[in-house]
Amino acid sequence: MKTAQFLKIKEREKQNKLKLLEVNPFLTDESGIYVFAREDENGFRYAYIGQAKHVLTRLAQHLEGHEQWIDLSIKKHKLWSESNPYGWFVSANHVEENRLNERETRAIKAYADMGYQLRNKTSGSQGKGKIGIAENKPSKGYRDGIRQGRCNLSNELQKLLKYVVIAPKDEKELTLRMYNKFLRLTAQEETEVNNGE
Image (cartoon, rainbow, N blue to C red):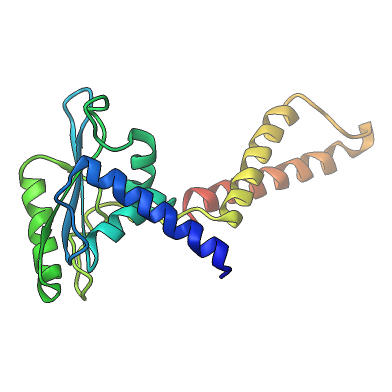
């Protein structure tokens, strides 16, 4: 990695840490459990609980992320402030590294019991045997976008072809067979997209 790029990344991380400390000045870079929590305009409460060996650094990474649900939600709703009471508030507790898995699982359960809608995909921990608590859909990539585009195109073509006959009079049977084949292919393509294949 080029030195200039590395310095820019470190500067953004530093700025993000300062933003987080404005929300909660008690955040540190020790190991621990962190919680993003917010209440929306309608009184619904949401939370995301995580663990990190360096909490403040991990929280700063969430502000730069683009893949996890919480990262995207932070970009949309921003962090909590007096002028943004519906933003994400962040808190953390110091936990020894060897107890992170156990304490994360307990924190997730505690927030669920308090009525928060959790945005975690699992019940916590980095170890074996963790349990999924949310639908775990793979992130969509380039090929998924291409497949979805083909599906959208075939749906539009199906609508148009209902009103168009493209064949000389003596080839109507062939045209009908080809049209039916086209419908089968597009139905198969749509099924693949819906099943996430």
